[in-house]
Image (cartoon, rainbow, N blue to C red; front, side):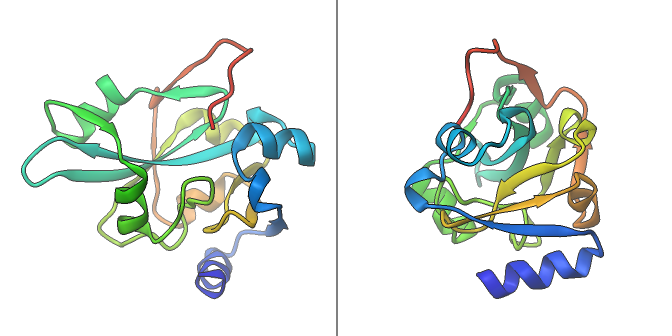
Length: 165
């Protein structure tokens, strides 16, 4: 996965940095605290599923200071009556990545990637790196360079005391 990650990042033409991390500290709150990143620049990639037959999936990129709007925006975009976060097992099966390391880079070509517009307002973002032992630091334009679609209000602001993992 590391070679594929580097290959896709290089293809974007956008500057990036691979940031190594302790796999035990890969979850957002622990990572930010241990490595000095702000939750406001930490962009989580979350796989969601529309409860339809067959089920439909998408990857959503949202800031850790926000909460993905699964019940309204995601559900409507998926064209499903119900939607939820994909299980850890489904996430691994679909992406080959564990929770805490999911990245928007190298996902299956038929999996849409939606990015909350707030992510694009950041100077830099820190994203999962495809494994719990690394992250990717880049400008948000790297997401558009891989074909992600920017969606207004894909997520909602959370109280400042909460940080999503």
